[in-house]
Image (cartoon, rainbow, N blue to C red; front, side, top):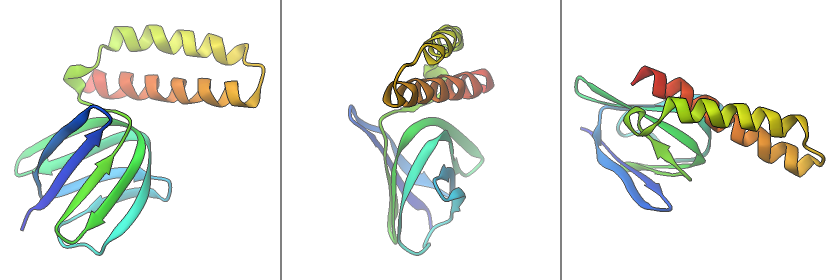
Length: 132
């Protein structure tokens, strides 16, 4: 029995299909799901999500969000889910450099946290974009 998966962003459904296995990093650590697992709700971190369907493995750079596991399927709600083909590594490197510069001059905790989040997202884009 396959696991029904939907990845949803503010722009619509990024990907929908059946999978044999999905892995991602939650705030609790690395998680892997097989079909018919017990229901759960988890918070995602900024990291790589892998979806395996048969001999095909898809990768997404997810930018946080939530995973809702139900008996019949799994729904991922995230700000962004990018495939390696959608990522410009060169642009991510430029933005990483700018985020590092902004981090150095951050004055408030809020500004520092925002710039650290940008830094994390750009590092993920470089990581996953370099694999594609």
